[in-house]
Image (cartoon, rainbow, N blue to C red):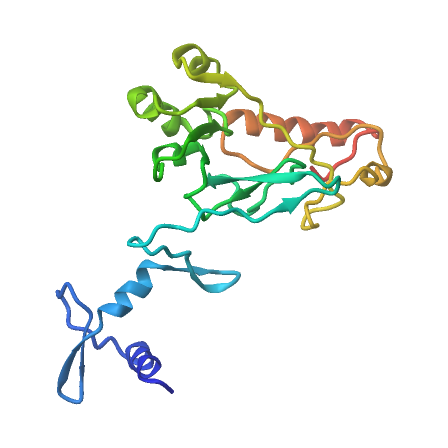
Length: 242
């Protein structure tokens, strides 16, 4: 056991840190030892119910990031581009729905083209040549983001485009362009690999289906779920399990 692990073990057995101190100070065998490196760990880690302790990506703030992009080609032999993405909406799916033309990079902000989604629009990094904002979720889901945008219009003037389906943003922002975020959801069952397949429809056993989740964040979510539940009771041609 190295010294660091020994100290962490001591701390896990009993709370031996001095209370009220700005530093992690451990009294061990009569000696006071400053352990601020443990605070550093807390800053760069999260605890996951799935993976346990996660160490977050780190940067060396004093060194310029190496910019050169790897050469990656699609199945047709054409080189794909790489864009930096900062996003809180789909961080469970790092590459998103795979494109034939580009890949997302969620780490290298030295790339020349940046995309920011939702509240990440207010978390811009560095000074890329091209910067785009994307409002993927509707106003009913991310009300605070839309409100903040309306109050801080000057903060997004330097965005090349704000891509959105929201009518008010399209009317109020000169750099807003219409963009509808869509995805083909055709999966066999809950918990599968979330990879769409052209053959999945062959598993249908009913003539009518409704693509929806169990979300209940807005009044329209509740209405949608209620319709799906009632249809499954009144029609033998409607499949349940939405």
